[in-house]
Image 1: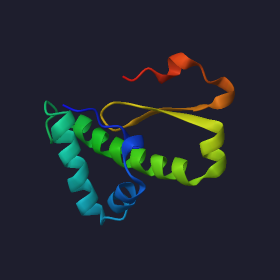
Image 2: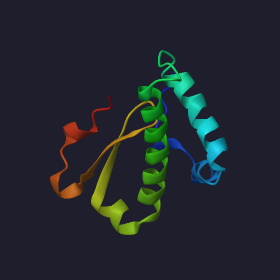
Image 3: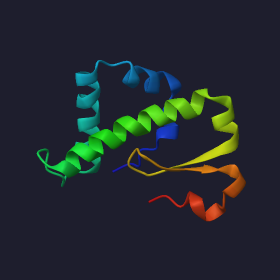
Image 4: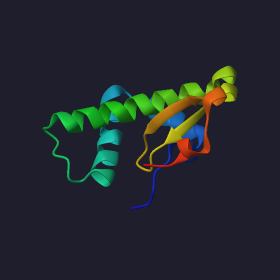
Length: 101
């Protein structure tokens, strides 16, 4: 499976996903869960948490890209499955923070 990094998404794609009606956005996230977490059963709390993490990560990514001060003073660390794992103030940033999990 090819890694999925949010920062690789075009702005237009990110905007398109976030502008989907809520039910359609959930359908999009479910496709990501199926691709990157096929072992997680849909009727579990873990599945629900993954969907919410995708939604939150997409909104955080949008905020990061569009807020000049946020973008200039913080570094985002991504997972290879489409999540934001961490956001670090550049004042405290260390290279080992970039390890992808």
